[in-house]
Figure 1 (cartoon, helix red, strand yellow):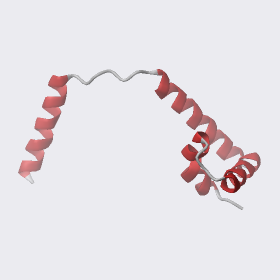
Figure 2 (cartoon, rainbow, N blue to C red; figure 1 turned 90 degrees about the horizontal axis):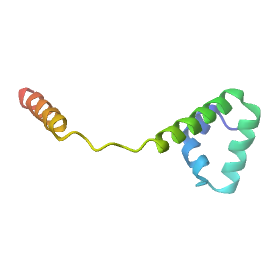
Figure 3 (cartoon, rainbow, N blue to C red; figure 1 turned 90 degrees about the vertical axis):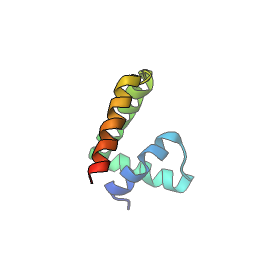
Length: 78
């Protein structure tokens, strides 16, 4: 029997259909028996759909330059 940890490790691959049939069937059986993992998978599906529906805006070049400068300055002090 699979554990919840096994499902969380393979959740993305399960959603993408990128698992061998025996593994996919064992995960589906675990989902049928575990309400917490069903909730987890539902949250994963909703999160993926939300992220996919929002196009990424190009980064603000000035903000990116300022961040790189802060990181570089912090590294120089160490």
